[in-house]
Image (tube, rainbow, N blue to C red; front, side, top):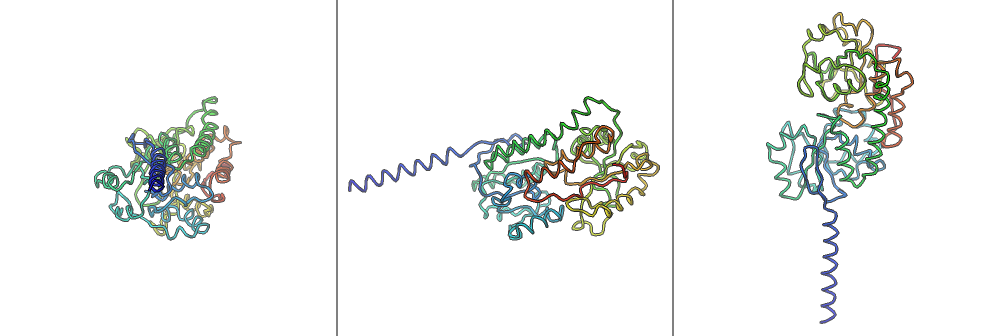
Length: 377
């Protein structure tokens, strides 16, 4: 009997030890909305509230980018089909991953999410209102699933670093996250330091969001996202004082009246959304000649009639998805070259993006993210 009592006591002590370890792994993290959330780290099972979160998740788990992912939103295949296809070719099992609809469009399946038993759900901040209205946070909390918000889209120049640090903490990859953050900061400094010293005249830039995606013109950016990136690159964002938030619209007459020096249009392969559309299909391994042809076609719209940028050939296209991932620094470098070619003749954004892939990302680099009607740029 004494023997069994000792065994029982030892077993109880072992259970207490294990319990203490589990408690020691429970940490409070603060998401980009300021919410404090308790999570057991490192997380092993994650639901990506947006498929494009793999842009950074893959940088933390370079060798096995999907090893923690138990489910994800279905947007990557449509929003960035080339990148999805490249991941699918290398990791064919992702075709079996459960997919979700979006919070904002009401197609998110919370029962499916609960059944996957994730350690955490990463949700983009733009879905916050829809998430709260549906009571999803409370419903998930009841079954022990924490939800945290990240942001690479609404205020990316403010929230990208905190978002990367948060995901690094959740994954137990803080050191790798800091390495990425330093590379990003150093890459941006190559532009901002040069501009600070030279103090050049800043050209007026019209940043068109998803030009050709629809017949309407013109979607643009306020003082955030690509609008803020223009400022980092040494330009003046034409829509800064027209659009109060991150995203909005300017009418064609405003473009003509403002007469911008430079026009930069975001593009991507949106065949899954707008088959045969006039959008400029830049992106991973894109056909640059075809993208340039379509870019030229967009200059013939009424909104660009007689505009200085068109007359001078200073019309460019940049990969739209830079607006929703932590690689914005590559776009900032390329825009700086377009806006200030004399200052940034030696800057090589392609080399920067290639180094990013080699050091951090699971996929090999393929060009195709930028095109311009100005052959010298």
